[in-house]
Image (cartoon, rainbow, N blue to C red; front, side):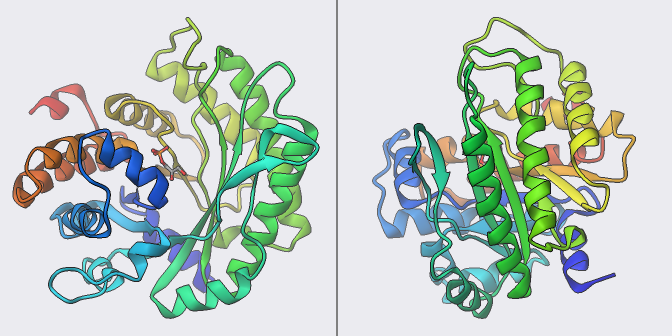
Length: 336
Ligand code: 13P
Protein backbone atom coordinates (compact mmCIF):
# COMPACT_ATOMS: atom_id res chain seq x y z
CA UNK A 1 0.00 0.00 0.00
CA UNK A 2 1.47 3.38 -0.96
CA UNK A 3 1.70 6.15 1.62
CA UNK A 4 -0.91 8.19 -0.21
CA UNK A 5 -3.30 5.25 -0.36
CA UNK A 6 -2.83 4.78 3.40
CA UNK A 7 -3.73 8.42 4.03
CA UNK A 8 -6.87 8.16 1.87
CA UNK A 9 -7.99 5.01 3.68
CA UNK A 10 -7.24 6.50 7.10
CA UNK A 11 -9.47 9.49 6.34
CA UNK A 12 -12.42 7.47 5.05
CA UNK A 13 -12.52 4.11 6.81
CA UNK A 14 -14.80 2.77 9.58
CA UNK A 15 -17.65 5.10 8.70
CA UNK A 16 -15.53 8.19 9.15
CA UNK A 17 -16.11 11.14 6.87
CA UNK A 18 -14.80 14.61 6.15
CA UNK A 19 -15.89 17.93 7.65
CA UNK A 20 -15.67 20.50 4.85
CA UNK A 21 -15.00 23.68 6.83
CA UNK A 22 -13.14 25.37 3.99
CA UNK A 23 -15.60 28.11 3.14
CA UNK A 24 -13.75 31.10 1.73
CA UNK A 25 -14.07 34.27 3.78
CA UNK A 26 -16.72 35.55 1.34
CA UNK A 27 -18.81 32.36 1.67
CA UNK A 28 -18.35 32.20 5.45
CA UNK A 29 -19.46 35.81 5.67
CA UNK A 30 -22.69 34.88 3.87
CA UNK A 31 -23.24 31.95 6.23
CA UNK A 32 -22.59 34.04 9.36
CA UNK A 33 -24.65 37.00 8.20
CA UNK A 34 -27.56 34.67 7.45
CA UNK A 35 -27.73 34.02 11.22
CA UNK A 36 -26.99 37.67 12.15
CA UNK A 37 -23.42 37.12 13.32
CA UNK A 38 -20.72 39.58 12.40
CA UNK A 39 -18.12 37.93 10.14
CA UNK A 40 -14.75 38.82 11.66
CA UNK A 41 -11.62 36.70 12.09
CA UNK A 42 -12.39 36.01 15.76
CA UNK A 43 -15.97 34.83 15.19
CA UNK A 44 -14.91 32.63 12.29
CA UNK A 45 -12.26 31.05 14.55
CA UNK A 46 -14.61 30.56 17.52
CA UNK A 47 -17.27 28.75 15.49
CA UNK A 48 -14.76 26.52 13.78
CA UNK A 49 -12.73 25.68 16.89
CA UNK A 50 -16.00 24.77 18.63
CA UNK A 51 -16.57 22.10 15.97
CA UNK A 52 -12.94 20.93 15.90
CA UNK A 53 -12.93 20.29 19.68
CA UNK A 54 -16.21 18.30 19.66
CA UNK A 55 -16.36 14.73 20.97
CA UNK A 56 -17.40 13.34 17.56
CA UNK A 57 -14.10 14.42 16.00
CA UNK A 58 -12.44 11.24 17.32
CA UNK A 59 -15.17 8.78 16.31
CA UNK A 60 -16.61 10.29 13.16
CA UNK A 61 -14.37 12.82 11.44
CA UNK A 62 -11.36 11.39 9.59
CA UNK A 63 -10.35 14.69 8.02
CA UNK A 64 -11.17 18.39 8.12
CA UNK A 65 -10.76 20.65 5.09
CA UNK A 66 -9.63 24.14 6.07
CA UNK A 67 -9.42 27.48 4.31
CA UNK A 68 -6.11 29.38 4.17
CA UNK A 69 -7.10 31.72 7.02
CA UNK A 70 -7.92 28.85 9.40
CA UNK A 71 -4.84 26.69 8.84
CA UNK A 72 -2.72 29.64 10.02
CA UNK A 73 -4.84 30.41 13.10
CA UNK A 74 -4.18 29.48 16.71
CA UNK A 75 -7.10 28.44 18.88
CA UNK A 76 -7.85 30.43 22.02
CA UNK A 77 -5.82 27.88 24.07
CA UNK A 78 -2.71 28.60 22.00
CA UNK A 79 -2.56 25.43 19.88
CA UNK A 80 -2.54 25.70 16.11
CA UNK A 81 -5.72 24.50 14.37
CA UNK A 82 -3.89 21.57 12.67
CA UNK A 83 -2.57 20.53 16.13
CA UNK A 84 -6.12 20.43 17.47
CA UNK A 85 -7.39 18.42 14.51
CA UNK A 86 -4.47 15.96 14.65
CA UNK A 87 -4.81 15.49 18.42
CA UNK A 88 -8.20 13.87 17.70
CA UNK A 89 -6.67 11.40 15.26
CA UNK A 90 -8.12 13.31 12.33
CA UNK A 91 -6.08 14.66 9.39
CA UNK A 92 -5.80 18.26 8.23
CA UNK A 93 -6.79 19.15 4.68
CA UNK A 94 -6.67 22.44 2.81
CA UNK A 95 -8.60 23.99 -0.06
CA UNK A 96 -5.97 25.07 -2.58
CA UNK A 97 -7.97 26.41 -5.50
CA UNK A 98 -8.50 30.16 -5.63
CA UNK A 99 -12.10 30.05 -6.80
CA UNK A 100 -14.19 29.72 -9.96
CA UNK A 101 -14.09 32.57 -12.50
CA UNK A 102 -15.90 33.19 -15.81
CA UNK A 103 -14.59 30.78 -18.46
CA UNK A 104 -13.22 32.70 -21.46
CA UNK A 105 -14.90 31.27 -24.56
CA UNK A 106 -18.06 30.31 -22.63
CA UNK A 107 -18.57 33.10 -20.16
CA UNK A 108 -21.72 31.77 -18.52
CA UNK A 109 -19.67 28.82 -17.29
CA UNK A 110 -16.88 28.68 -14.74
CA UNK A 111 -13.25 27.62 -14.65
CA UNK A 112 -11.47 27.09 -11.36
CA UNK A 113 -8.21 28.98 -10.94
CA UNK A 114 -5.17 28.53 -8.71
CA UNK A 115 -2.49 26.59 -10.62
CA UNK A 116 0.05 29.43 -10.77
CA UNK A 117 2.47 29.14 -7.84
CA UNK A 118 0.62 26.05 -6.58
CA UNK A 119 3.79 23.95 -6.13
CA UNK A 120 5.21 26.49 -3.67
CA UNK A 121 1.90 26.93 -1.80
CA UNK A 122 1.59 23.16 -1.43
CA UNK A 123 5.01 22.90 0.20
CA UNK A 124 3.98 25.65 2.60
CA UNK A 125 0.69 23.88 3.50
CA UNK A 126 2.54 20.60 4.06
CA UNK A 127 4.79 22.36 6.58
CA UNK A 128 1.70 23.77 8.29
CA UNK A 129 0.43 20.19 8.77
CA UNK A 130 -1.80 19.48 5.76
CA UNK A 131 -1.85 15.91 4.42
CA UNK A 132 -4.68 16.23 1.92
CA UNK A 133 -6.11 18.96 -0.29
CA UNK A 134 -9.24 19.98 -2.18
CA UNK A 135 -9.92 21.57 -5.56
CA UNK A 136 -13.48 22.13 -6.76
CA UNK A 137 -14.52 22.36 -10.38
CA UNK A 138 -18.06 23.60 -10.90
CA UNK A 139 -20.50 22.81 -13.72
CA UNK A 140 -24.09 23.94 -14.37
CA UNK A 141 -26.73 21.95 -16.17
CA UNK A 142 -28.82 23.59 -18.93
CA UNK A 143 -29.80 22.26 -22.33
CA UNK A 144 -26.35 23.31 -23.67
CA UNK A 145 -24.17 23.12 -20.55
CA UNK A 146 -21.81 21.86 -19.38
CA UNK A 147 -20.10 22.55 -22.71
CA UNK A 148 -17.26 20.41 -24.01
CA UNK A 149 -15.00 23.38 -23.27
CA UNK A 150 -16.03 23.49 -19.62
CA UNK A 151 -15.66 19.72 -19.18
CA UNK A 152 -12.27 19.74 -20.83
CA UNK A 153 -10.84 22.88 -19.15
CA UNK A 154 -11.97 21.90 -15.64
CA UNK A 155 -10.78 18.30 -16.01
CA UNK A 156 -7.40 19.58 -17.19
CA UNK A 157 -7.08 21.90 -14.18
CA UNK A 158 -8.18 19.18 -11.72
CA UNK A 159 -5.63 16.76 -13.14
CA UNK A 160 -2.72 19.23 -13.09
CA UNK A 161 -3.66 20.12 -9.51
CA UNK A 162 -3.81 16.44 -8.50
CA UNK A 163 -0.39 15.67 -10.00
CA UNK A 164 1.20 18.60 -8.13
CA UNK A 165 -0.46 17.57 -4.85
CA UNK A 166 0.83 14.00 -5.08
CA UNK A 167 4.32 15.34 -5.88
CA UNK A 168 4.10 17.29 -2.59
CA UNK A 169 3.21 14.09 -0.67
CA UNK A 170 -0.47 14.80 -0.11
CA UNK A 171 -3.76 13.21 -1.19
CA UNK A 172 -5.81 15.29 -3.64
CA UNK A 173 -9.59 15.37 -3.30
CA UNK A 174 -10.96 15.66 -6.82
CA UNK A 175 -14.23 17.60 -6.64
CA UNK A 176 -16.13 18.04 -9.90
CA UNK A 177 -19.43 19.47 -8.64
CA UNK A 178 -22.39 19.37 -11.02
CA UNK A 179 -24.72 21.91 -9.42
CA UNK A 180 -28.31 21.19 -8.36
CA UNK A 181 -29.60 24.58 -9.62
CA UNK A 182 -32.07 24.39 -12.50
CA UNK A 183 -35.14 22.46 -13.60
CA UNK A 184 -33.34 19.48 -15.13
CA UNK A 185 -34.36 15.88 -14.44
CA UNK A 186 -32.37 13.34 -12.45
CA UNK A 187 -31.77 11.55 -15.77
CA UNK A 188 -30.12 14.72 -17.14
CA UNK A 189 -28.00 14.92 -13.99
CA UNK A 190 -26.95 11.29 -14.47
CA UNK A 191 -25.98 11.85 -18.11
CA UNK A 192 -24.09 15.10 -17.53
CA UNK A 193 -22.35 13.98 -14.33
CA UNK A 194 -21.23 10.84 -16.19
CA UNK A 195 -19.69 12.95 -18.98
CA UNK A 196 -17.95 15.19 -16.44
CA UNK A 197 -16.46 12.24 -14.52
CA UNK A 198 -15.37 10.46 -17.68
CA UNK A 199 -13.43 13.52 -18.83
CA UNK A 200 -11.84 13.98 -15.39
CA UNK A 201 -10.49 10.41 -15.34
CA UNK A 202 -9.15 10.75 -18.88
CA UNK A 203 -7.12 13.79 -17.81
CA UNK A 204 -6.04 12.28 -14.49
CA UNK A 205 -4.61 9.27 -16.30
CA UNK A 206 -2.90 11.48 -18.87
CA UNK A 207 -1.22 13.37 -16.00
CA UNK A 208 0.01 10.11 -14.41
CA UNK A 209 -1.96 10.65 -11.23
CA UNK A 210 -1.90 7.56 -8.98
CA UNK A 211 -5.64 7.04 -8.52
CA UNK A 212 -5.07 4.87 -5.42
CA UNK A 213 -3.84 8.01 -3.69
CA UNK A 214 -6.87 10.17 -4.51
CA UNK A 215 -10.39 10.70 -3.15
CA UNK A 216 -13.34 11.60 -5.39
CA UNK A 217 -15.83 14.16 -4.08
CA UNK A 218 -18.83 14.09 -6.42
CA UNK A 219 -22.44 15.25 -6.29
CA UNK A 220 -25.18 12.68 -5.87
CA UNK A 221 -27.57 12.16 -8.79
CA UNK A 222 -30.59 14.37 -8.07
CA UNK A 223 -33.22 16.31 -10.01
CA UNK A 224 -32.64 20.10 -10.25
CA UNK A 225 -33.89 22.20 -7.35
CA UNK A 226 -36.56 23.81 -9.60
CA UNK A 227 -37.76 20.53 -11.08
CA UNK A 228 -41.09 18.99 -9.97
CA UNK A 229 -39.56 15.54 -10.01
CA UNK A 230 -39.27 13.83 -6.63
CA UNK A 231 -36.97 10.86 -6.10
CA UNK A 232 -36.93 8.50 -3.13
CA UNK A 233 -33.64 7.93 -1.31
CA UNK A 234 -33.55 4.46 -2.90
CA UNK A 235 -33.84 5.93 -6.40
CA UNK A 236 -31.14 8.51 -5.68
CA UNK A 237 -28.89 5.70 -4.47
CA UNK A 238 -29.50 3.53 -7.54
CA UNK A 239 -28.80 6.31 -10.02
CA UNK A 240 -25.77 7.56 -8.09
CA UNK A 241 -24.28 4.06 -7.94
CA UNK A 242 -24.94 3.51 -11.65
CA UNK A 243 -23.09 6.74 -12.46
CA UNK A 244 -20.09 5.96 -10.28
CA UNK A 245 -19.77 2.31 -11.32
CA UNK A 246 -19.69 3.28 -14.98
CA UNK A 247 -17.31 6.22 -14.75
CA UNK A 248 -14.94 5.89 -11.80
CA UNK A 249 -11.96 3.51 -12.16
CA UNK A 250 -11.96 0.80 -9.51
CA UNK A 251 -8.48 1.81 -8.30
CA UNK A 252 -10.01 4.89 -6.62
CA UNK A 253 -10.24 3.89 -2.94
CA UNK A 254 -13.01 6.13 -1.78
CA UNK A 255 -15.80 8.49 -2.64
CA UNK A 256 -16.85 11.26 -0.25
CA UNK A 257 -19.98 13.07 -1.39
CA UNK A 258 -20.63 16.79 -1.14
CA UNK A 259 -24.07 17.77 0.18
CA UNK A 260 -24.60 20.51 -2.41
CA UNK A 261 -27.69 22.17 -0.92
CA UNK A 262 -29.55 19.05 0.25
CA UNK A 263 -31.02 19.32 3.74
CA UNK A 264 -29.16 17.58 6.54
CA UNK A 265 -31.71 14.76 6.59
CA UNK A 266 -31.79 14.30 2.79
CA UNK A 267 -27.99 14.13 2.64
CA UNK A 268 -27.98 11.56 5.46
CA UNK A 269 -30.84 9.38 4.13
CA UNK A 270 -29.40 9.33 0.59
CA UNK A 271 -25.91 8.39 1.81
CA UNK A 272 -27.43 5.64 3.95
CA UNK A 273 -29.22 4.08 0.96
CA UNK A 274 -26.08 4.38 -1.17
CA UNK A 275 -24.26 2.29 1.44
CA UNK A 276 -27.07 -0.24 1.79
CA UNK A 277 -26.97 -0.79 -1.97
CA UNK A 278 -23.21 -0.41 -2.45
CA UNK A 279 -21.97 -3.49 -4.31
CA UNK A 280 -18.61 -1.94 -5.25
CA UNK A 281 -15.25 -1.85 -3.46
CA UNK A 282 -15.43 1.95 -3.12
CA UNK A 283 -15.74 3.34 0.40
CA UNK A 284 -18.75 5.66 0.21
CA UNK A 285 -18.85 8.41 2.81
CA UNK A 286 -19.46 12.10 3.31
CA UNK A 287 -17.48 15.30 2.87
CA UNK A 288 -20.22 17.68 3.91
CA UNK A 289 -20.11 21.39 4.55
CA UNK A 290 -23.66 22.64 5.03
CA UNK A 291 -25.18 19.24 5.87
CA UNK A 292 -22.83 18.94 8.87
CA UNK A 293 -22.79 22.53 10.06
CA UNK A 294 -26.18 24.12 9.39
CA UNK A 295 -27.99 23.23 12.62
CA UNK A 296 -24.89 23.80 14.74
CA UNK A 297 -24.40 27.26 13.22
CA UNK A 298 -28.03 28.20 13.83
CA UNK A 299 -27.83 27.07 17.46
CA UNK A 300 -24.46 28.76 18.07
CA UNK A 301 -25.69 32.05 16.63
CA UNK A 302 -28.20 32.37 19.49
CA UNK A 303 -25.39 32.34 22.07
CA UNK A 304 -21.84 32.18 20.76
CA UNK A 305 -20.58 31.28 24.24
CA UNK A 306 -22.67 28.11 24.40
CA UNK A 307 -19.88 25.79 23.30
CA UNK A 308 -21.26 22.59 24.86
CA UNK A 309 -24.74 23.00 23.38
CA UNK A 310 -23.34 23.72 19.92
CA UNK A 311 -21.05 20.70 20.15
CA UNK A 312 -23.98 18.45 21.07
CA UNK A 313 -25.83 19.51 17.92
CA UNK A 314 -22.73 18.96 15.77
CA UNK A 315 -21.96 15.60 17.43
CA UNK A 316 -25.46 14.32 16.67
CA UNK A 317 -25.14 15.31 13.00
CA UNK A 318 -21.67 13.77 12.66
CA UNK A 319 -22.88 10.57 14.33
CA UNK A 320 -25.89 10.30 11.98
CA UNK A 321 -23.66 10.81 8.94
CA UNK A 322 -21.21 8.18 10.19
CA UNK A 323 -24.09 5.72 10.65
CA UNK A 324 -25.21 6.53 7.10
CA UNK A 325 -21.68 5.89 5.83
CA UNK A 326 -22.15 2.33 7.12
CA UNK A 327 -25.77 1.92 5.97
CA UNK A 328 -26.88 1.82 9.62
CA UNK A 329 -28.86 5.07 9.87
CA UNK A 330 -32.63 5.17 10.46
CA UNK A 331 -35.24 7.83 11.15
CA UNK A 332 -35.76 6.46 14.64
CA UNK A 333 -32.05 6.85 15.44
CA UNK A 334 -32.26 10.37 14.01
CA UNK A 335 -35.01 11.31 16.42
CA UNK A 336 -33.75 9.42 19.48
P1 13P B 1 -21.52 21.28 0.81
O1 13P B 1 -21.58 19.93 1.49
O2 13P B 1 -22.18 22.38 1.61
O3 13P B 1 -21.96 21.22 -0.62
O4 13P B 1 -20.00 21.69 0.79
C1 13P B 1 -19.07 20.76 0.39
C2 13P B 1 -17.96 21.43 -0.30
O5 13P B 1 -16.83 21.29 0.09
C3 13P B 1 -18.26 22.26 -1.48
O6 13P B 1 -17.09 22.58 -2.14
